[in-house]
Length: 476
Figure 1: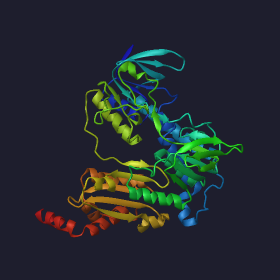
Figure 2: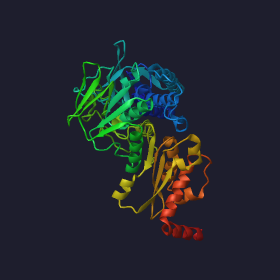
Figure 3: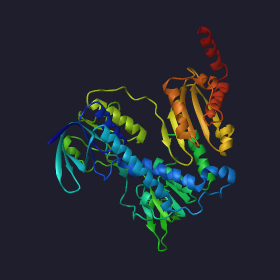
Figure 4: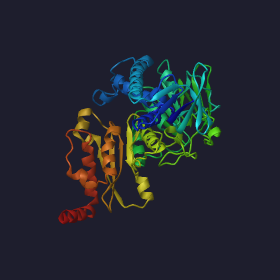
């Protein structure tokens, strides 16, 4: 039986970052991946495919140019599912190639097969040919990711009633679609298909969507979706999904309302892929959604030498945070702890339009009773916005009245997931409103919106901010 310093189960963002980090610390590392290719959910069915699909849809539909040329403008008049898939396959091949090279140059051993625990330090890996190999590990990291939640009440057929994995294999673009679930994944796919001129209806049992996002941003986002004729049905649960005799999909809501469309996409949650690991053999158990409880600082489970990271530990379930979780877990697992992660990280939602946020929302600031002021900038106020033909887009900054520090940055609109990093840096470096007022931003850029929002907040704060700033300047 081969013995390793660290065995990583899963090669998604958390697994690959953990494996490479441990290997760079001269540890003997094994990555076990049950898929035919490395990369995990992120590369094959999640992050990379959905973002590639989004970019392809925006390019072929001419979405970004419609502000100038009208809503009927399209780069390619007849867009097919094959058009979307062609670019996807090229991107995935590249991602896999890069990852294989990273493992090779860092001397990370790979093994294809499904792993399960024999005991807390021993794993059995069943390979595709049926051969079973036992490996021992000083430390183990579970980075198995998640899969779509598929309740028995939904008659999935892989063609017209599908989950978020199956949507990548559709044979045609539907003229109409019902998306069940207004979480991140559901909203991303709903808005992507809406950009392709599919008539989309979103059904969500809660009264709102994206509750962790600043309410003003969600309100602006919702307005943009309704403005392009997307239907948002909140506060209604789905009672039944079925195919009618004409081949259409019919969704019946608890209030009796009936909705009809060519395709139904079910996106109401995901479940951890832990059911095949035989967790009781190592002293662990998963919750009802297959997630594993960990220490949020070290990512240790209840068994000290076993760690878990990535989507399998729950929120925020981002590729970016999963990578950092994997790195931290690997360092701790091999006895070389690193610094704690920064308190505030960016959250990106790759919808159309994008949403990105970092720091406290206005609702959280109110809950903590922090005196504050906000600054707002609309992208249409910037010269770059004019050049790009943008008539929407919003950047919101929240500042403390007491310390003048930036508490939160919230953006909806083109390039939001790129722009947010300026605000992230200022928040984590404890910067104040003066940074935005006194610094120069490239012109013309969308980043100029930071200066506009900073000046807006500065003017609203008035003497409350100017007197302390003057006193500090005199003291220096």
